[in-house]
Image 1 (cartoon, rainbow, N blue to C red):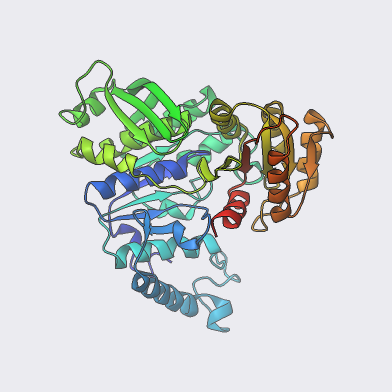
Image 2: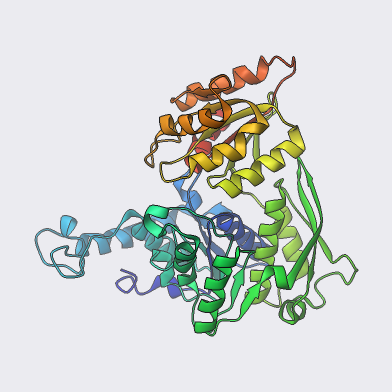
Length: 433
């Protein structure tokens, strides 16, 4: 399909981001810093929270309407000419009756639409997040300036494999011949896979625990500050004259609470300096300070305090709760829902001790879910007294607010709505619109 469209994925240099958690934040941070540096940045990430155009953006704003229209018309033309169900009975490139033929998926069509948008908008650079895995993801038609892989966890095991080694192997598929790999901290099994693949591809490996030092992390309800120092000659050279020469490194801040976001920022800065070594420090600092990402530890209500965050793996949920506890204490209300392919049992074990009330609900209808099974997982560790099943999302939000305002402690409790991005999207719509 990309060939039929004249390979729009080659319209601008790119940075390609994969991983189990944090890849959307890293993709957005890269776009924010490049935008501040004066580049026209096409940003592709998923899922969206409110509007599908959030997936296909110019920096942190939507493309102009005529860009979407022109790209959409070109995609329609390709689809009507080449997809059998639209083209009639004639034999086409995507004819399922041929040996390798199959109709394009929604994700493949959406990915091509983004590349077309980037070309029509005359983007200077693209920051692109994979959808799932990496090796077989449609975004992997890219030949990026640098590949980035964030933390790996067990996820989508029915598709990517049941072990860390298998999942890392799929993510490692984005590593390109001779192109650098910026790699966030990994467990031993994943790191071995990535080191081996980088060596096979003659890809310079920038492994962040060995090349960057994150210190002075300060998390408040307004965001996160941190200091950054580089230890590798490669990044030190790129950062020369652009970072403070103080013994504590350069200080940065992002308007999102959480130590994990500081770690994501280090990943993004390292990738940026690898791809664009002449980038100015002020562009990095001001870009991060202006960062906008919905549903990343976002406060949508003051009374009661209501935080939403997409955290759908055990590690990401643990770190989200750690930030929530540090700011609001223990004993609040948890509103949770996840898709069927997530490890609900592990997440229940990670979450139950920190909340006085737990409400399990349906995480939207975009993906298959089984809230009854999730409820059973939480009941098994938290008990029936404090665990409730409210399948309708709107009703579950009202129940959470009721518990928060009528606690036995005589004070208003904070609420954390988390799990699937599709759930936090539904919660956000109730409060913001």
